[in-house]
Length: 253
Length: 224
Image 1 (tube, rainbow over the protein chains, first blue to last red):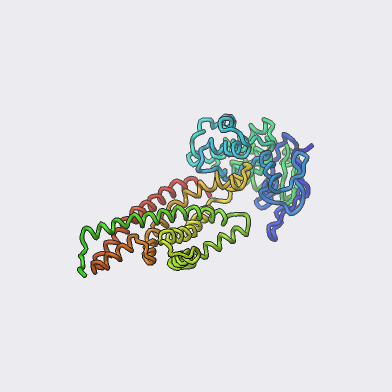
Image 2: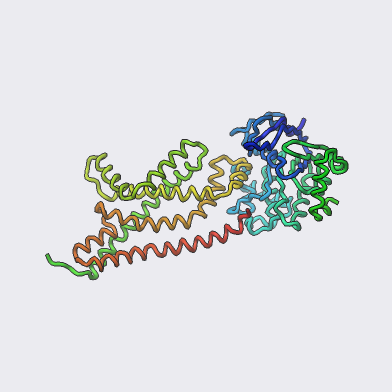
């Protein structure tokens, strides 16, 4: 049984059709990479999954239960689904440790010492044990993004969403974040990522989803999608990505 | 009647009125702070009725002269309790309501200055709306709001001079009394003004320093 199942999700912003009948199933332990041009609906899809946007139609099933995106159920869902944003969105007034312990203590009722122990554990997973007591603005972008990943992990979610988390980073900082992602993928975490890191998608994703005009245009294992795109839209997208960014080409290998 | 001239006893009389100016300002700031916090939170509430109530309050008190608010409170209390009211509770209440409107508006702006993604990040950690406010939004908004709040305190200290009109003896009223006694307005009032200046100037400097310091810290932490 899939952990997450979207069926017929549509969402409009005014006249713009952001999502147009999207259906997608994510199995436990699966890593799904969503690719596509900006404005193709990728980020909206992630925001719909964890209730930041309410779809106009369609259903979201998590762990076999249909989720009504209101109050109580939504809060329960948020404990199960983590999200990491492009601009990190760490809380600048809180230390790295407090950023991480806030959710577990306030929303899940964990004691502070237990949450601090947990913070040490998740910081070790992103190689930042020594930054526990620093503040976000003292860290590099790559480090901030790894703290954001640790913050999501501390909620012990069953699914983590990643919304273009390397897009705001300087090129030399992307590698350290991608390595953390790869480690999580190998560890069996269920992940849905919107990403431009084709190298990561090729190596670590079980499934690649190409979105175009609010629809899932192509979907399949990375070797198949990258090796033999069936539609001209995907072929030209891959060309465009690899030609504009030589670094991305190198990482794509 | 003998006229006195402005000397040390007259100056001391003015100084003895200063605590009342400060007490009124401080009381209004504290009371207005509580009213203002409620107003600011209501203004950002998801419920439209609460937002309208808070907006109505702010518009009413920002759109009428503080002197009229003072008269209405003073005579209003007198009518309601059917007695000659002591000026102190009336001026304190009037300036509390007045401050509540201004602080509410200042703090609403500070809350709204916190970027939307901060709310979302808190929401995605399963925090409820009050928890988002308490742990993530208000602590950050408080920092932003310190300079304009101190700025308002300066304004408030000067505004309390209006209380003189209903006979509350604070600094300005003391000045009027000394002018009546000495017939030397051009000595008394500059001295009164100088005392106000000495009360307000350090606060203005403080506001400017805080503003620079907060800009410096927040400047690094915001990346959009």
